[in-house]
Image 1 (cartoon, rainbow, N blue to C red):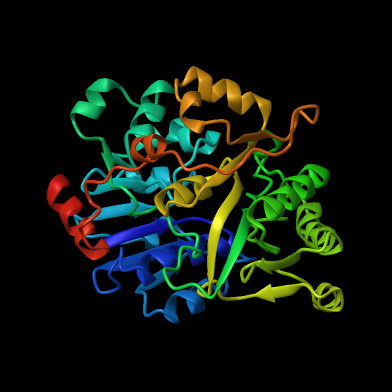
Image 2: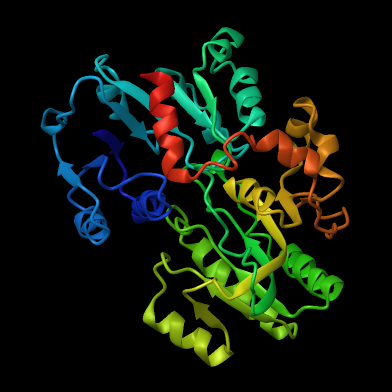
Length: 365
């Protein structure tokens, strides 16, 4: 038996964890989930996990967490209480970077407490070494393990038999603190310009907006930005739809959207994205993995970061700076094979998800 430890108040985090089971990355027969309970926000976690037959237990005190010696513990998210579990040296501790991105949250010093860290490819290794989280010595001794697309998730828009082609916009949320806000949602004018031009470029009126499940968690205005953007695109003659099954949208807002002719959709299986636009987030790696051309919306400081990391040249001008309005707003989406190879290791490409965890366990035990 292996374990998954999670300390969060955010429903989206539990839903993301469930996605790993649905995708057969984690086998419900071999894994047991411990999640920390709080007075608010976590009461329904057990029901969500039980619906997928996932073995689990909610706990209030660390003393309630019982794990067999020699087992592996997976951590999908960072939390202070993780340190208490990691202190048990009779277990092996693996941090799963629940998505691969250049956000500062991907290089927080706490990451070095884990025995092993999963990354998608060489980009993740270089990022962790460049920020001093790990050393070349750690790399040589396999503390950073590239596992390709195992944990990066999917856009849900790369169907091989689509009924509807669309343009995809996936903004990230506003972050837990201001310095971690990578979202482009507040820049409505630029977004309208970019998406309208993309619609003309591809001669395609359909736009799917897929906000991060945490949107509005810190700043409620960001949820309203999603609604306003869809309404503005409708006025421009486009056909926007919002995919936000995990976003809490009020009854009155739903009525408002319906009157405006804007659909809230719950299924992406009939769509295929011919191009995407995203912020600095894990969505970028998903677009690369699924070979969907994209434009990256980012702040000017991200240009500097990419340049210092020596990878700015891999972007072929498909970067769109949203805090420098004097620049041209639109850059044609592009898919860089070189960037894809750098970001995502292909060693596991032909290995089914359920077999990858077994190979990982063999490597470290």
